[in-house]
Length: 186
Image 1 (cartoon, helix red, strand yellow):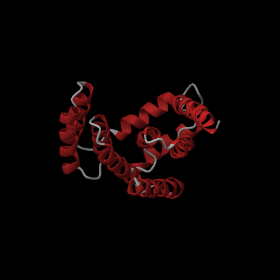
Image 2 (tube, helix red, strand yellow; image 1 turned 45 degrees about the vertical axis):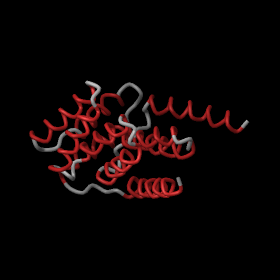
Image 3 (cartoon, rainbow, N blue to C red; image 1 turned 180 degrees about the horizontal axis):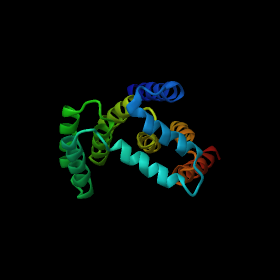
């Protein structure tokens, strides 16, 4: 338990530094950077469209073969076979270790298999590769809630809102978590 808490503290620290101090690395990041900027300025009526563009950008590995492995992993998840999905995502990671999408997919598969530690490790790698991957942050927040760590989950949700301030889903999660935390205080 203590090791897991220490690992989480390192993850959250890394997230704060990565989100707070990350700068565009190169020209290939510019369109995604522009989408994040647009997302931060979007209103309630337009944020979902921009968010969907970011999701689509996250799924582009730059290789048709790697995109096929990603698609196969996602299909296996939808078919309810996370073990098969984990194999596809692992193959993707073997061939494209710098592609965050593979780690995010495998984290989802591991989570579905009840492998929380490996899921957290993959989410940490996603955030190392893409510090603004708010869905990876959301995955960590979900795990923190299940681990009865609402304060850590709240920190992650607030970090998501810094990137995606109009997210109705995250606003609802925060409201629900606030009610839960107030109920515990009584």
